[in-house]
Image 1 (cartoon, rainbow, N blue to C red):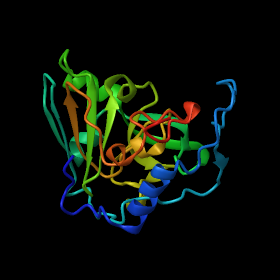
Image 2 (image 1 turned 30 degrees about the vertical axis):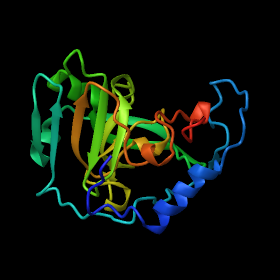
Image 3 (image 1 turned 120 degrees about the horizontal axis):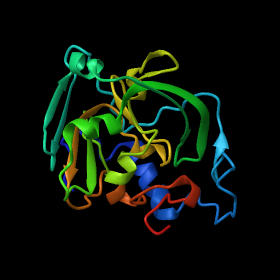
Image 4 (image 1 turned 90 degrees about the horizontal axis):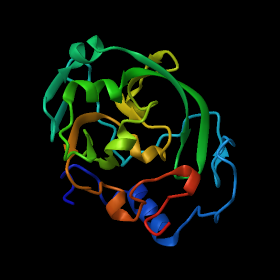
Length: 221
């Protein structure tokens, strides 16, 4: 994968997390717990919302924000802020699980359900995967099935207020059932593709899918 030239591949956080991946840091072993338990294995609860990024926090005003939905779709979409806000709005309450072992319960989100986007774009039969592109050069990959999760959301608000820049505003993905690195911040493009294309952390040792309940933190999990 070729990174955006503005992506700080050698930032301190990037180097640290790559070292974690090589060392398998935060692995806790397979703990047998029923899915009904709310906290995945190896996680601890926090009440704040830690900020993690690649060292860049792009400043994007809603006046300049756009989102492209393209690739293997029947209908390409290009949304400006007004277009995005005209879509049917959804409200979800969900938990966050970060690969760095913290979890936060009961986050209230508002935005556009990914299923609504899929209804409009209509992925072609060969589109089995999605690549998310962010304004800081970040990418991450998902299966189409995960992207279409019933609680997956293109979020613009958290706890009743506009999503702040440090947490990925104006718009980020929220995909609660996977580790939060899959919920890309600062979304600018959603690309539908016919084959899996690992993203920024996936080519640096992180798991291709990232299921917290299976502790899919790193590539050999």
